[in-house]
Length: 379
Image (tube, rainbow, N blue to C red):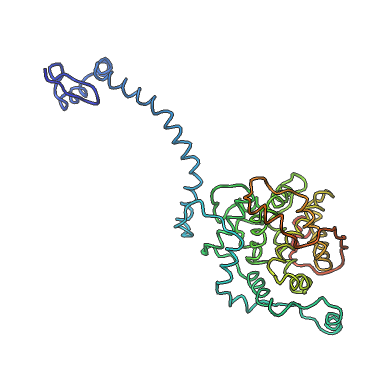
């Protein structure tokens, strides 16, 4: 007896026609007869068994596809816009030092032409500054100061990979997201920008408005503070736009640098970037402390920012001391590498005694975030 194997089922040639004739005869059979056919029933039974065996595997694949959905969406977005189309949906994080090295080697001559290193003083103001200070910045630090101010003139360029990596790193470190987000969308408003395009708000402080928060989220000592501030910015009554507030603080740092209010500290440490980074975090910490303990709301933002600017210009050293004291009291996360723990324990850059509070005074402050009070003064 000759037999034929079809789909794993042995079919006797004596009982059934050849394969092609069998399929032809199946087509011509009534539905009721097809249902009763023993070979078809065997095939269907085999199919159901295989389906049950692969059900768990299909569910697992579905979960994996769902996890990758954000990745796929990002890839489609990049392909459509032509931006970073060669990158996956999970670009690597970038450290502050790596981003700084990029700017140190980039051609910023166009932006160097626009900077004003110091505030111009005339008359009695110039004489008072000459006699009573603050001291001028050491000449060997002028190049670093000018680089800071040039970066503050540099706009966000979505075609530059480093620019986008900085933006994506801040987003991921603050929100805990694993995948990249589109370069335009309402998710930036949730982060505290005023619109769907972060570059619009960054015109007020350039890429320095991203370098400062990048430092805060990538520095192990200050990342917990960044998370605390971001959570407070999401509070149901005490909320405020995190990124807009951050940009305003960067503007305060720029003005403090141009007025040479931090020259003494820069000269002492022989650094400009590091001092401004610490001043940025110190101002943000002071804002966070006042905002949280005094139950401030967005309607108070204008006054608080003015007070912060006055404090930063008059007593920057006190702000830095307050920050240092806070960081020493707050333990580092337990999952940090040993070298970070060793670095933290050995750093003694700033004394830890508490500084005094500054008093708000009259001044002209541009770029103040007062969304519900003075919208015409928004960045």
